[in-house]
Image (tube, rainbow, N blue to C red; front, side):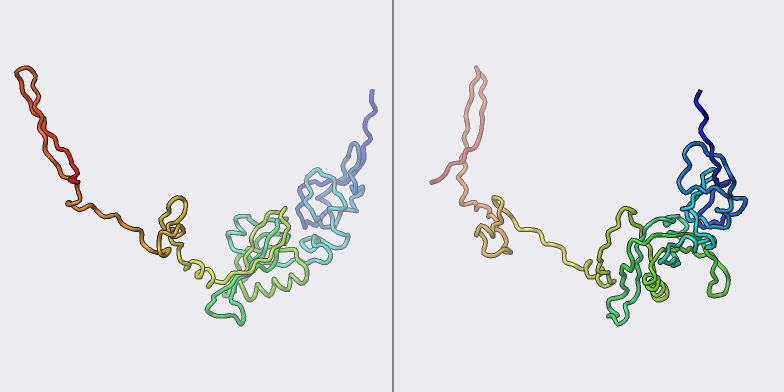
Length: 274
C-alpha cells in the first residue's frame, strides 16, 4: 500500500478577492495542501494580512506572495501600480463605460479632438492620436458634482501611463475631448497617423467622379488606334440609305395548277438597276 502524500499547511483564500482588496483576517485561512507546494505560497497568516491584492485570487486558491502588494503599501488602486508608472483617470461616455467595452487589462489608444491653437479657423476641429497601446488599470463609476453641485455618476477609466503621458492626458482632458479606441492585445505596434481635420473630410467628398472611358475597338480605344482626331471626338454615326440608293422592287406572279384548280402566288424581288 502506497504511503499517503505529504500534506503542507498554506494560506488559502476563503472568498474571491478582487484586485486592490486589502486582505483581512476573514479573507484567508490555513489549509492543507497535498503534493508539491506552489512557489511563493505563504505558510503563515501574518504574511498575508493587511496587504493589498494586485491580482485576482479565487476562493480555495493558495495565496502567493507575487499576487500581493508589498507589506505596508496598503490596498486599493495604488497598491497595484508598478513602480515608475502612474494611474491617470479619463472620463468616458456611457456607451464605452456601461457597455463594458473597456475592462481592466485591455489595451487602448487615446484620441483627442478639438480646435488646434493658432490653426486656420476654416479647417474646423481636428483629431489626433495622443497615446497608443495603453493598458487599462481599472474601470467603473465615480461620483462627481455637476455644475449645480449635485452628485452624479461618471464613467471613469484609469490608464497605466508614464509621468510624461499623464501630463499629456491631463492637458488634453481639460482643453479637448478624449476618446478611447480598443485595440487587439496582441497588436503592440505603434503607427504615426497624420491626424484629420474636418475640412479634409469635406474636401475629399467633393472630388469629381471619374469619367466613363470612350468606345473601344479591338481592346484599344479608337483614339489610341488613330481613328479619332482627339480622345473626346464623338464616334461616327451611320447614315440611313436614301430611297434612290435602294434596289428596284419588281412584282412576280406564278400560276400553280393542281388538276382543275388554279392558284396564284405573288412575291417581290429586289433587282439592282446597275
